[in-house]
Length: 306
Image 1 (spheres, rainbow, N blue to C red):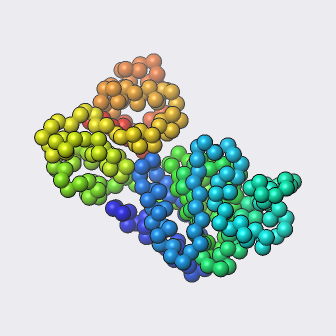
Image 2 (cartoon, rainbow, N blue to C red; image 1 turned 180 degrees about the horizontal axis):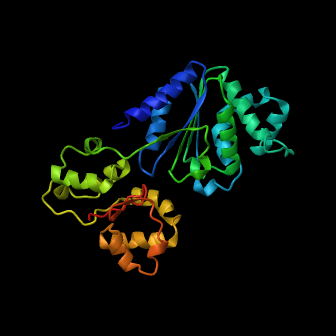
Image 3 (tube, rainbow, N blue to C red; image 1 turned 120 degrees about the vertical axis):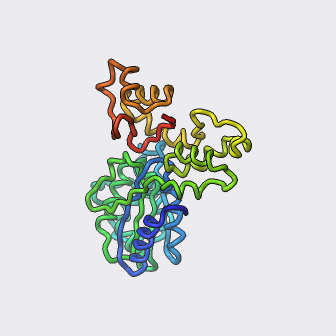
């Protein structure tokens, strides 16, 4: 991986601690396309000799209770009979593997804690949850409950979430921000055949987002990459980038979306220009950050060239 030395070191330290019998939890957070999933893959690669559990939050399943938990613990179902009977019954009920039971909010999270600890008796364990912002609420509760109470079992828990995932803002959880790549690291991701002037434009447009750095060149012709034909203005972001940011954009207030539309159409981030285009709404627009007279809408890149 390029430009992720610090993040890789934090993950390795967590996994090494679990290998030595010390449990811990860590949250990677950053905007879409920034490389969180690649860092999770790196964590799995570092966990030689571990039991590895993986789950991914899906927006389409965020309303299904225990969908994420079911994916996470499926490899451990053979051990359910070795945790306390009340917890085992509640867990089987939650996962539709046994009769329905009457249980409180404590029982299933406690069952997850017991199950992880039992599995770690045999060898260290790594539990990975990607896109935790879309995890169903009961699964998230169980994951956080277990993460806070693990101590000397040899369990490493790593989650990844987008920056706007307020549901995982808990004080005890170690957070690692996955920042945009520095220009020199961004350049290292680009094909060496791309001429410097075009590479500079790609780097400026992608704003340190690895997904954009990989997608945008694929949408350009060989002549454009070689500098023999002009680049479009603005550059196309690519379908994966558009899809990754669509959910974040849809969650913004309507006035903010209107401001983004003006910014994209006018190829500008200038507050005064956007304000003139939306005079009746200018006071309603929620700007996450302001730098001088230009808008940097949080971690949401606006592909303009002003």
